[in-house]
Image 1 (cartoon, rainbow, N blue to C red):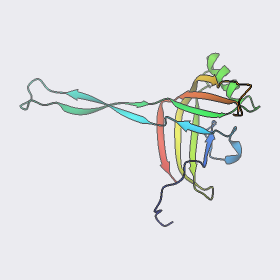
Image 2: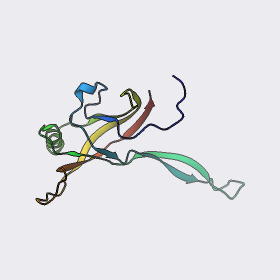
Image 3: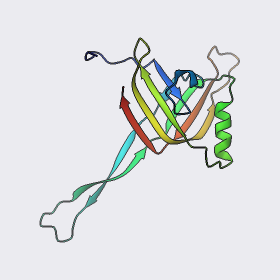
Image 4: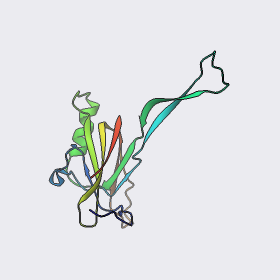
Length: 151
């Protein structure tokens, strides 16, 4: 494949809450995914008898930010079932989530994998009898490690 000279558009993506890469196993389309990031903590260290008056920069722990998923309210109960598993303390409630960016011809070009993920917060957007907007729901997910893969 030749190098691409322009960035991929952000509107073609798949979210799979079961960690697979099969497009038929995606549970409901999400309108927006925000907050995918990871940060490496830094520790400053200096020996007491070091000859120079400066610190060494040591790599500390990895910290993954919470991710927010937004979508229109649809009928399947997959999100609520998972939320209930976590609330009830199920040992198997943690999942692997994949977010795949697709090209204009719907081929996966990048994949973000969220390991050991679990829901933190569910919010139903506002309901307004005078509005024309779709009813929206928001799910905030915590995870332990982010993997990035270019396909």
